[in-house]
Amino acid sequence: MVNLAPGAGLLERKDRELAAILEISRVLTASFDLEENLGAVMRVLSGGLEMQRGCVFLRDPSSAEVRIVAAHGLTREEVLRGKYRIGEGIVGRVMESGKAMFIPNIGEEPKFLNKTGSRPDKNGISFICEPIRFKGEMLGVITTDRIYSASSGGVDDDIRVLQIVSSLIAQFVKLWESYRKVEEERQNLKMELLQRYSLPNIIGESEKFQSVLKAIMKVAGTDTTVLLLGESGTGKELIAHTTHYQSPRGKGPFVAVNCAALPENLLEVELFGQEKGAFTGADRRRIGRFEAANGGTLFLDEIGELPLQLQAKLLRVLEEKTFERVGSSRSIRADVRIIAATNRNLEEEVKKGAFRADLYWRLNVVSIVLPPLRERQKDIPLLVDYYLEKFNRTYGKNVRAGTETLKCMIKYSWPGNIRELANTIERLVIMAEKDTLDPEDLPYNFRAEEPAAQRRLPSETDFPLGAEVKNLERQRIIKALKENNFIQQKTAFALGITPRKLAYRIKKYDIDLAAIK
Ligand SMILES: Nc1ncnc2c1ncn2[C@@H]1O[C@H](COP(=O)(O)OP(=O)(O)O)[C@@H](O)[C@H]1O
Ligand SMILES: [Mg+2]
Image (tube, rainbow, N blue to C red):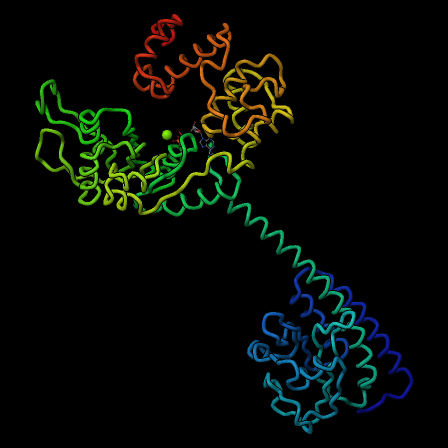
């Protein structure tokens, strides 16, 4: 160690120190890349202050080690080897004690481990290890190797420079840590947003509903049978549709059969088709829904209503993937994915003997329960908005729900679930005479003080049979007819009334089918 005598050399050295420190403070904030900035610091130190080798070690929070984050004069392999546990070697000791260390000649120092292997000959090399500390917290250390000669500065100068540099580094590391934390949180939030399941026309942010969508996305990629359970109007059919479109079969047909809509013998023909002459009146061959759904998805709605005899046939199709048309013994293969739905408690039905246990287990590979609307109140405002917008568009209006009105809607128990909500909003939009809906505009059973037990679906008799209501019903029927291609059976089903009742109302309201087609 040689102390330089005061004079021109010393002044020049001080100038270089100052320039180096200035440069270091500049490069430290040049980017938000920790390793890049620290690497630049080491380059400045080596160039400006003739430090042969230098490293910045930082504490690795995940492993309780300090490891090299930036280095000068070391190969990649040497950098990777540069890891110390707290207390190990000089670096580990400085980390532990928080006190700087100076080794005049590392060749004579047994504690000097040279783990990086970067010094083939340790003799004559001095080593300085300075803590990097922020408000008493040890963040890491900065080390340098020097070979002191008459022309180079003294150890005291080096230590002073390193102290300044390490405090600059400490501030930068802290800044970088908080930046990284914010950035990580931002990324996490972004990921969370991306992972929220969002599908067109499906509204639901509540946890319960999100887990339904998550399950749907999981099963969509498979061919497993899915059983959808839930009260009427909770979205079973919509979810079945979505599962189909999200699946590789999405381009194939989606065929829905309502097992409650037809008597047993007709349902059998509907499902499996029929050969000409199968029984009296069978004057033509009919393709069943199973065949129609080939390559796609067959949605068996209200599966709980399937007659026992057909349950046995369905089980066979599920197990063997083959079936016969009514009146034929020729087996037909069908590549069909089944999604079944029911609002019944199938386990109860099994116990009662109304539903075959083996079919239940066969269908119940994956069952997804759709929560009733009253269990996902968080989604009510979203659904109200969605349907207001939809029906405003349909009816060319601009109706909004007032805050109090929305509160009543959130409190309401919605026994008919989303179907009831959609119908209620449609009715409100049609009837609205002003743009803002007040609580008085809601059907009387929305009144919050009414005990839940008394709540029920609004029925025809809830409304005075004013001209408005008649007009409303008339409009609904016309709309449903159009939506169902004027097939009265389908229209009646969509409206939840019998075909006979529909025919009666078409007459009563004087709906001219030819004119509206
Ligand atoms: N999450 C949802 N977002 C928007 N509309 C929904 C949602 N779930 C159901 N609906 C709507 O509610 C009505 C009833 O849904 P549907 O699937 O027929 O219920 P279910 O088959 O359980 O009786 C349909 O008009 C459907 O589009
Ligand atoms: Mg349904």
